Image (cartoon, rainbow over the protein chains, first blue to last red):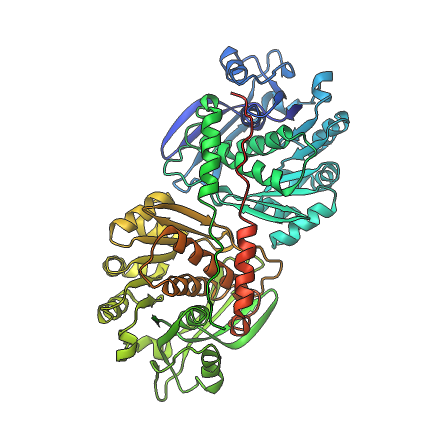
Amino acid sequence: MSLTVVGSIAFDAVSTPFGSREKMLGGSAVHFSLASSFFTDVRVVGPVGDDFGDDEYGVLHGRNVITDDIERVPNGETFFWRGHYEYDLNTAHTDDTRLNVFGDFRPKLSDASRDCDVLFLANIQPDLQREVREQCGNAKFVALDSMNLWIETARDSLLKTIEQVDCVLLNDAEIRQLTRKPNLVQAAREIRALGPKVVVAKQGEYGAALLTDEGFFGLPAFPLETVLDPTGAGDSFAGGFVGCIAAHGGEDLSHETLRRAMAYGTAIASYNVEEFGTERVRRLTRKEIVARVGELAQITQFADAPLALRG
Amino acid sequence: MSLTVVGSIAFDAVSTPFGSREKMLGGSAVHFSLASSFFTDVRVVGPVGDDFGDDEYGVLHGRNVITDDIERVPNGETFFWRGHYEYDLNTAHTDDTRLNVFGDFRPKLSDASRDCDVLFLANIQPDLQREVREQCGNAKFVALDSMNLWIETARDSLLKTIEQVDCVLLNDAEIRQLTRKPNLVQAAREIRALGPKVVVAKQGEYGAALLTDEGFFGLPAFPLETVLDPTGAGDSFAGGFVGCIAAHGGEDLSHETLRRAMAYGTAIASYNVEEFGTERVRRLTRKEIVARVGELAQITQFADAPLALRG
């Protein structure tokens, strides 16, 4: 079972009320691949510049992520994002974006990457997502993420790409924006009518919801007393979610498997935000993940015992 | 087991994208008492004017709510609220508030109301909440709600009142505002340090969270395709939650009981928003409540089965 992820590889400068970093490893494909590496072989596809060095490769190799398809652009600079969070850590404020080598990125997949069983199209321009998707004809399960920018500027292309995937993972606000439907149940059904069998609404500190024809599943975020940096939480969630589906063979979309995938995604995302960037997930252990999934089960169950109500 | 609720009794004029009502029965004490009436004897304390007639009493009596302590002010008019919701039903926009008889309200409790086992102090001025609380010396369980207005204008009084109750139910934004702590886990602990053993964070469409010394419990809202009017959802939740605790004797604050109470509150609140004002809950049946609690259990469980992760 092999998983390919295409997306951004970045340096992030992040400031939160609890600290800051001037240049740390980030990007959707990085966070996704570290999280999914606990479940299967992961190949990461994305561009970097000369400034991307051994330390950065080392983080990915430390989790056995296959970096052969990282395209190193000579004389280029890696995608750079600078942002900050207020005390309310839910909203990222962008202070600077330098696309650098990411601006001219055209994904080039090796045979091994193309031959993946599971494909994750992280948040990149939807035309490029579709190009990649068409190259990976053997993929049994394809999921995508996107963002408000593409919903606003490339909506038709995004809708065409969505038709060709099995799963859409978006923030709940993006799902509403995309479908122009304020009701999440209706909005998710509209997305499923385009093709995808699975819709996941990421809800930040409130958790995530799974919406399929089989029904609804809601999971709160793991409650944390210390959140240092939410950057990458959504991609870590996606990595755990899609990775778990890959670990189940990529074709089992039963609610039992999808719900378990939601729990693994939630668990890894919760570790991600405990420290800056990839600092926590790069040294995460499988034992810690399993423990947190167990805690998630514990904090969401209640006994549906009979109670005599008054008529 | 008897439950007393003190709060507003109102006429609401509400407009949502799905319809409107010019003058419908509302108010925190009304929504609360209808919801809690499924669990125990409920006495409602609050003021009304001459315009509060047989139809309105009829709704409460239809659910066996005891209305002896509704104070009818001669030549007075009942509290009136006019508001509207946009497509995003999460935010109520107030267009008009006429306190009328509610402006001079001083709660007068009969012996029977004072002698309650369980007391709910709905959202009224915190000095008045404390006056009532002090009159109900036998209450085994006392819970309160409040709002941003009192946090801004009567914070010290509200904190004094909170010291004297067992449970605080607030929106999560209000919990942050009250404690000036953005982290919910920390904020809830700070509230518990004042006295209350139980903190419930209402999270609107995202559900609710329970925070006690024993731990955390999170429950998503029941997913609905049709939400006509969210007015009263929070008070319906509180009625189900506090009512369920009353049905368990009022002194059992184990997580098992509190979690079940969260489920009953969530179930009744979900019915409340399906139609305008009290229109749905007034004809709700115990069978429907039990069915929805069962569905809530179903949509929140996942199998914590072992999965072989990569180290």
